[in-house]
Image (cartoon, one colour):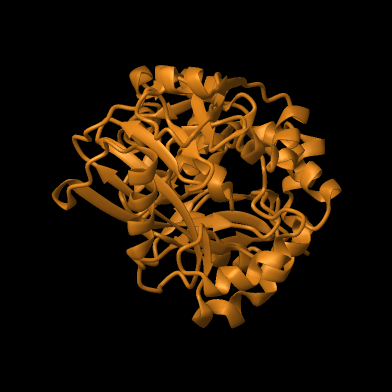
Length: 422
């Protein structure tokens, strides 16, 4: 190893772990990546997201007045956010924090500003990363389109769009005729659109993650197909990771980027992080009967409809439930029903539909956990990104590498610090 380089164990091979590993390798560190499963597999949230890379994704789920909607989330099984009754007692402390996090305009303004730090140049960061790993064609910057029944429906989301505008997000407004000239497949009931022109999307997340992993290997990363079980210290200094197979991976520092599995590891490192799974669903319609010009989010469905190499991906829905609870595939039926209404020419042959469910690791305040553990600065957390994990992967990886290399991000470290939950 060169002077100043360290042996770093990165726990997790999702987008956050791989981007962290890639940046660490470029900085001259020696990296071992631990994960019981392969990068880009269907088990991970990095595989099943909506594929959007949007500077506009800075609006937190928890907004002022949310508490009024909680009863409907419990009673309406067809809404965009559902809370399973059986999970409610365990989730209640998280839900209280979740509601309080968005209770005032000032709170959501702070959250949006912090998220903007991770997302504002996300499209360009991903374009550069894809180019570096030899898969530049996988990142398309065709824009991202939000559509509404009318301008009044857009104006009803005034706070959300004001947050975006205040953080430098720009867009083009498309009135009825222009909107349908731009995207002829849309149902006529959509009469107003917002085009985020610098937004981009990924055509194949699995292939993209595999390419990043391959590049990490070419730079010298070692992959260990095992889980992390514990940390080993000598004289308060981290010396290794104990794996599920009871092997020791020697390291000077560790990065916990294991998605929803990060919660138990964080507890062993001295931090009780309120991390829960926002279960998300998607389906992919192979050989779709329509071709979207760019990804679209209809306001009434709150779902991302994204053209990919594998077909038209319909993704969205939030279901708060235990990690091991059975999937409710009615959530995919809801996505399909919305899509049929949004695109009258769309055919939904069951033989051409692939269904998926996964776990977004989410904190109640809508911000990821990036920073030093309570027990030791040898352990760095990088998890809890919720809906923005894929888009914010490169920016998070850079922060992690800077922290390990001794370069701080003081202002942003406070926003994402694990210490905010202590």
